[in-house]
Amino acid sequence: MSLGRPGAHRVALIDICASADLLSGGRGVRFEVDVGGRNAPAFAIRYGGRAFAYLNRCAHVAMELDWQPGVFFDFDAEYLLCSTHGAFYDPVTGSCRGGACTGYGGLRAPRRQSADNRQSETAGRSARSPSAPG
Image (cartoon, rainbow, N blue to C red; front, side):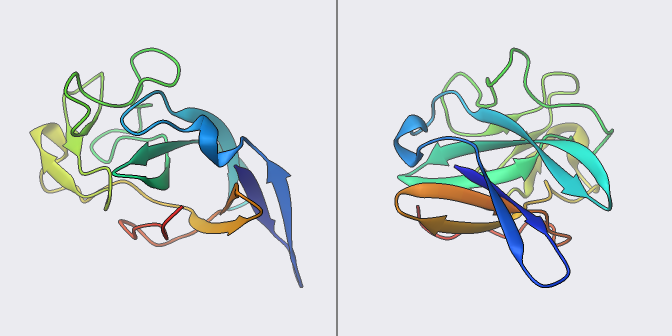
């Protein structure tokens, strides 16, 4: 997986992991992305055979989601779970599915690019936008 940093005329990719390193419903890969000139924690996961990436920040309160590094899914690997508040999110769309995030929206997703079986992320401003197949 690679991280893209927006520039004036181009996007520079920073390698994060091989796409095959993300197992469906398994551990995610943590990384940092530039959002508004500041580093922000983010993560990538695979669900239903597709890779997705989100900022590692609960929509309810700006707390990181994982209860152990890289552990984002609930026990059934069905939802992304905020370990602090119990909010749960759809892994495909990032939208809130229940708990403390109700009424606060969903997870913010970086824009995704892919090349040569590598994943790349570019900091984005749009919330709840699903990533392309990976």
